[in-house]
Structures are given as C-alpha cells and as structure tokens.
Length: 437
Ligand SMILES: Cc1cc2nc3c(=O)[nH]c(=O)nc-3n(C[C@H](O)[C@H](O)[C@H](O)COP(=O)(O)OP(=O)(O)OC[C@H]3O[C@@H](n4cnc5c(N)ncnc54)[C@H](O)[C@@H]3O)c2cc1C
Image (cartoon, rainbow, N blue to C red; front, side, top):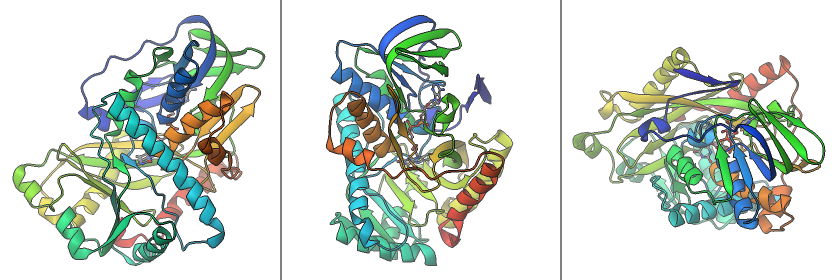
C-alpha cells in the first residue's frame, strides 16, 4: 500500500511492520520563530538535533520530517552498525590515512549510538559483538585476501574463518572463507530511530509529515511548509538523496534502491538446523553480494538487490519480482529451510555519489548539510549528524575535522543522462558477484 505525503512517497513494508503502532507527531502549522531548524529526522537529523539540544539547552530546535520517523533509509536499512569500512581492491598505501579517517568517523558514530541506546534504554535489539564478512566465489575470495591485509595494517581486531567454522556458526555451507570483526553492532533499525526520536532533549520539537518545501534566503532564513512558515537563524539539512528538493547537491547525489525479505519466525527445529549462534549478521565481501541476518526474534533476513530506480521505492509488483531473487539466494544458502516462507519484503533508497564520498559542511550563509553515505550511514550518519551540529555551533572536534576532509562530490549529469549513468553505476557493483549474490 502506498501512502503519499506531497511528493514524499512511503509505504508500510519492512522493519517498522514488526513493531507496535506508534503515535506520530502532528504536522507543523502556523508561523514560528526559532534559532535552529533541522530538516530530516533520519539518523543524521536525529543525531544533529540531539547534539544541538545539548549544546544550546536554552534554545528551541525544530526537527522536521516529510514522512513518519523510520520511513526513510534510517528505518529500512539492514541494521549493521559498522566500525571498520571495507574498501574494495587492494590496500592503496597513499589511502591508508583516509581509511583511518573514515574508520575514526564510523567508530565515533558507533560509540555515540551505543551510549544513546544504553542511556535511554532504547529497546532495539542492540548487540555490539561484531559481525561477519563472507566470501563464496572467486571475486569475493580475492577481496577476502585484500581485507585481511588491510585489517592487519590498521590493527583491527578480527578473526579469519574457514568454511567449516562458518558453517558451524551460521548454518550455511555456501561460504568458503570469512572474517569476524570484533567491533560493530547489529540493531533493529526502525526500533532504533523510533527510540532515538522518542528520547530527544526537551528543547527539541519533532514534527512528522511536515515537508520543507522552499527556503527564502535572508537573515533570518524563512522555511515554507504546506501549512507553516518558520523563521530561523540557522538551518541544517539532513535530507540524504532528497537534498535536491530544497535545491542542494543536485549534481552530486542520487538514490539507489535496495530490497530485502524476512522469513516468518523460525521454529525450534528450523533454528536447530542452523549454526550455533542465536543471532548474527553477515555482509558479503563482494559489493553486489547478499547481506544476511538471523535476528533476535528468530527471523532470517536477506538483502541482495540494488538498482537505480529513479530514487524511488519499489511498487508491490516490482517487489514480488525482487522477492524471487531473494528466494533463490536464500534457498542456495539454506536448502534445509526451503519450505519457510518470507513474511515481509521491503525496499529502501540509499544516497549514493559517483565517487563514494560523503557530504559535510556549510552550503551558504547559515545553511549546513550532512549526508550521502553510500550504504554505510548508520554509524557514519550518526557521527556526521553530531559533527554538523558542532560545526554549525562553532565547536571544534576530531570528528568535525575528519568529516570536513571528505572528498568533494563528483559531478553527475542532469536527467535523462543521470538515469542512464546511474543505472550503469549501480549495476556495476554486481560485476563478478557469482555465488555471493
Ligand atoms: C535497504 C538498505 C539497507 C542499508 N543497510 C545499511 C546497513 O546495514 N548499515 C549502514 O550503515 N547503512 C545501511 N544503509 C544506509 C543507511 O540506511 C543510510 O546511509 C542512512 O540511514 C542515512 O541516514 P540519513 O539520516 O542521512 O538519511 P535518511 O534516513 O534517508 O533520512 C532523511 C530524512 O529526510 C527526510 N526529508 C527529505 N526531504 C525532506 C524535506 N524536504 N522536508 C522534510 N524532510 C525531508 C526524509 O523523509 C527522511 O526521513 C542501508 C540503506 C538501505 C536503503
């Protein structure tokens, strides 16, 4: 079922489906004057608003989202909270400082989330015991060698595993080799963002289903919504691939649509046919490979499609055809569970740039932006969101410096050329994927 809020479509599939109904915040109405507005209540915007709330306890911060909290990528992702990023290809010596910089940002976001989940007792299946990186076919096995070398150079705590060890833990024979990275967390993403939204500081006011439609430049800035106008001194944009709706990043970011499926809850016998671990996550070492999880509520999930789809979600009929791809990949890994149906499938749109960079900084006077993490935004988005609040408040930090060092975005052509270029860009991630899909 598709629910349309102006030009910000959403649907009800996925992780949010597994949670109880939530009371949504009212849309914003009327005329307002506040020192701070944050647009976008995904992980970036939530982290930003939380930090601003702490930095300026006597000032009001307005946080707006076009949809309901959790309906963007932040509530639809696969729930891997990454500490150590994998960079495909061999280690490039001149890039080692860049790898360290990115991992410092990831680590900062992971640590922030860890504290926020624990201090606010957010019930989101948080599990900080690391996860697996797996390889079944030739290209991924090559990446395995590269990744081991990289982890050794960066002195990251990890453990290489062979096929037998992986089978024993995960219950699938598909993978030839894998690596367990000790740090990193798994989470129920929709429960995380809802929990974060429900525990914001008292001086942060959240309004859902409140798309910002236009900015009128001046001092103060004026933000126009359908039924409200807000005058503000500082505006922070945390809108991911939709920044262009307010006129920012248009030639640098677009959306790639990913889709995955969950089984129903497995019974005791089905669980016993898997490995010894009761909860785990596995990311493919090939960029087009499947992401798998056994969740705390005993469902297996698989995500293995990514495509350029005009930065939109999939319709029900498109989802049915992607589900067939999930099914084939699932049966290949777990032939003993071929009879277990999928209960839900879902899609989500991640922000991607041509050169895989992230965006951070001042866009114009009193307007700041953070976003676009190319599929790795749970920890990184949290760090970027926190850092953009610091930066806009004039607070220096190591994370601010690290985020400011992000490479500039590579230009992308306007539509219809963008559609063709983005189609091939996303498709190229599947080259040589083989059995890892
Ligand atoms: C299927 C899938 C799996 C993924 N798996 C992982 C994973 O396992 N680990 C990982 O690290 N990353 C993963 N990602 C990427 C990660 O989810 C994103 O990088 C991250 O959530 C981005 O957070 P964000 O807050 O910047 O953007 P979003 O979550 O997209 O939030 C942006 C918000 O801005 C709002 N908005 C947009 N325009 C306006 C407007 N004009 N007015 C008001 N509000 C507006 C939107 O409604 C949205 O809620 C995955 C992504 C997808 C789609």
